[in-house]
Image (cartoon, rainbow, N blue to C red; front, side):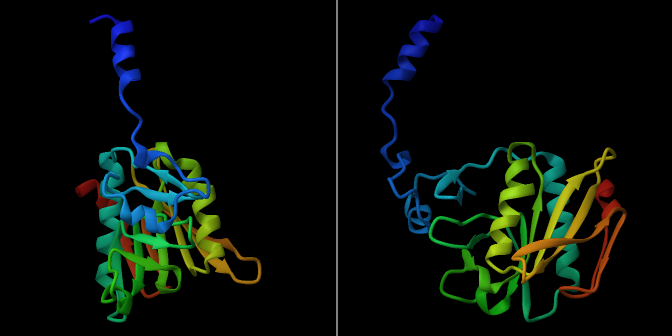
Length: 202
């Protein structure tokens, strides 16, 4: 089959009606109603965002941080991996890792959490989502009042570099409080000690 014939076949395929955005944009209700959506679809500014395949580094970095947070996590908090955080009618991102109040995990909708139940969100920068991870998502998390935000970059040695931010409530924005390589030791939101070089052994 030549290229023209292939192009014609593609053109003949009907556009999926479920993928056509309404005038108001998609809502959180749409995100959970549309069963055709691929796993880990996010809602940003009323638009559906599909996740590209994760790199091995990305998966390892998230596992390292998830496991490290679980080790020190107090009973009143829970660590979650890739769970939707609802920030508003058209905003429902899915952080790579988050820390939420334990009551929220036992609530009626454990597949999603409201911003008021979230203490920390972690975004590991990926090539397909770098602008969202570095710019738009921190804006949304800060405006929703989430107190702690970590942005995780990849070092030349393929190790995580964690940029730790704390919310300035007066400004409604995050303030960088430290950049951590090799080891991540923090007193908030609880006592944390993670060996970032352990990714080499994963």
